[in-house]
Amino acid sequence: MSDLDPRRLFAPDASTFPLLTGARARRLLLDERGAATAEYAVATMAAVAFAGLLVMIMRSDEVRGILTDLVRRALTVQ
Image 1 (tube, one colour):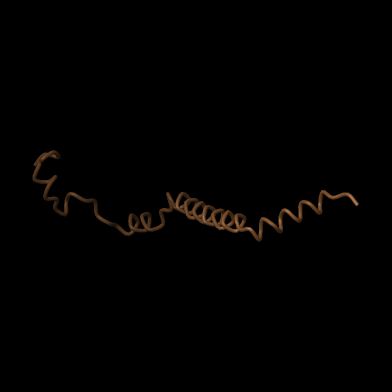
Image 2 (cartoon, rainbow, N blue to C red):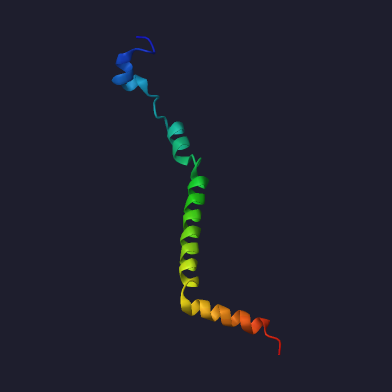
């Protein structure tokens, strides 16, 4: 059979895939490519959620009043 035999493309048999040797299995299990990207994605999502929470808190009238009072007292000369 040739490598481009349609029967092998649509009905693969055991010879189509390489054997999963011990060394290859270890390499696949220990491969961490892409792990950093996933970690950055999780950290970014956490930062976005925290920023959203801060925006909600800062928009409240009570917090706005506290911050306004704090700035006024800081800028007042006695």
